[in-house]
Length: 97
View 1 (cartoon, rainbow, N blue to C red):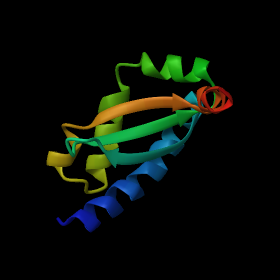
View 2 (cartoon, rainbow, N blue to C red):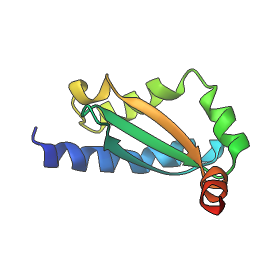
View 3 (tube, one colour):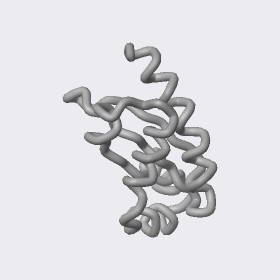
View 4 (spheres, rainbow, N blue to C red):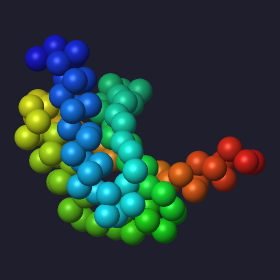
């Protein structure tokens, strides 16, 4: 699978991922490689409280990994995956400083 196919698979997987995590306050998601090239999925919630609550859930990383795997993202991309959580509220506070 080439990098364009991987990118399309991940992008396709982010839509149902956001939909399934919507009740937890997730409004959007994106993915980028880190400096070492390892994949990082970013999830954004509306509030810091929602972000904190979601961050404490032990099932979050496995759910993201399963969703990506079901939508044809290769295992070598999925298993080293790192999750980062942010909130709209925190981003607005950061920009205001």
